[in-house]
Length: 207
Image (cartoon, rainbow, N blue to C red; front, side, top):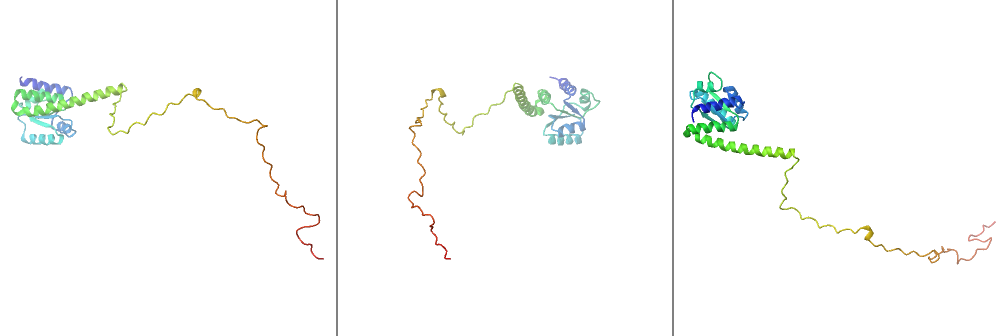
């Protein structure tokens, strides 16, 4: 596999909006944690390489020196010269570094393995996200697994017999003639002696 395919892949990434070219755009995407790999031309200045290293540390991504000059890299991305580019798509970044590893395994093999693992994890997360969105559209929800220490279910309530099957005893009520008569209220003065007229319990006043 020749180097022309690698440069063509970088041009494809640029047309798809997945490539940042130049120091300022590369710094912006790395600080935003959108860069997946930073690529530096082979004849870039040492100061440029140090800045790219700082960008990679800030964005937690890889950076590699390309086997292409600034003129060759610039021609691939539509510029007269380009010293730094950043690939923001994990799939394209993995493809570029894999082709670099096929071209020269010694300096790019380890980086290719790391990006391949990241690309695999990103694909798994993407598949899970798509499946989740599909379940939401279909009205499905993820079922929760029953807890191991769940409380035992209460015993089932006894069945209630229908009203028609319940037998009720008729209450017996005696007739009015057989009912016991209410006792008359006792007279508190029934056994007292009558008081004679003109006499009372008080003495007459002396005249």
